Length: 547
Image (cartoon, rainbow, N blue to C red; front, top):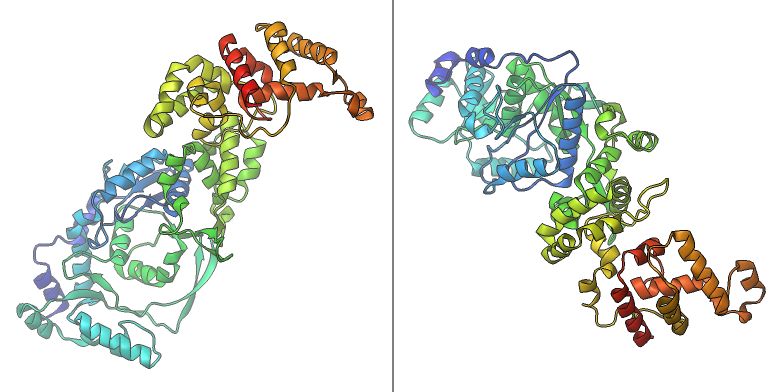
């Protein structure tokens, strides 16, 4: 029985590879266009490392007028979770990373779900068998486990190769007899590699990396007829005309296998770009380790949605770790967007990138400082409707007041940067909503300083008037404070502090604490202008009672 006859016997109804080569013709794109993909397994929602990878792949394709597509690698049903593929698509959409084609989107190079491409893979496996480059293997799991134990005991390389590849030497007639006898089997690659031969591969990110040829007869088709990841990705990336594979560097050890697969299949290999993992400083051990889905809540992309950190801020952070020169560029071009920056592989970090939540929070604050009050209001309302419905009702009730609050010190060269997430709006301005203020049994319980409340009462009841300019308002305070024993200049107070109750700033602080319960707040004049007289009187009475 010849190899061609064995191939036909195993796959009698499978089309020739020429059919798929004709069907999936070259893409018509401009020179230099990058075609890349995000190809996760449907094992749950996207984590930060995967989001980083998808973000960079999307940017590289978009800036080159190329294609970024989504392929779901679901050939391992044991790891698959229910609705896992839909969750991945949703997570990408939530972070505004929208593939131009792929799973659930469509395109000329589908299906984009690997389980629906079974016959395509079998066509190329059939071709390899016909050429003597693949063969059925009947070794059981128990036999493979026994081989592994011997290899470990004798300190030999673990795997199915050389003298350990016992089914490699079976003749085709025996293979047919065993298949006719219903013996279960898988298909292995007949490797042509020599493990003693070393080569250099130029990785788009890591530069030149050394590797030894693959000599393992890896599994390319499982007993259920579906391919392994190694084989499926090679066929898919060829037929989908992927130019660049951007993936985690945990795949670097598999590079020899993948390069050999492309060679034996007669394909041109894509350019591999092995992206550095996202790392974290473990506070318990002091060691730097890979960000873990199991250990670290910030590894989940849902963490940022729940925390109310805006998507654009997360993407800005991904850009800063994606290219080492992005942050400097962004500081020099604050009015431009991520899409105005040109990402390059040579500026991507080679080793692990430390994930810094504090830096992300700072980036988020800068993002908010550039938003208009109306934009922050609408985004906060949308977040609160989902995560804090009671506050959403207050936002809707006090729309204009909230926008005015958010607009305090928003313009100018140094806008306030006290908001880094949507919940911070409530955290920073709770005291301006009577419903929230009234929920506290004693809002002033943290106040430690002794104030001259009698002066405050006189100022509020006899002097303060809404509607004056900020200059007029402050002059009234200065005049009142001077008459009531406060120093109007720092110099006078320093010269003889015992002669004064304090400075004008101390009097302003007393007003601020009465209104906000805090010594630091946005512009006091603006806060008072937004507060009606009844609320002001109520605060005064509560303040007097508390002190």
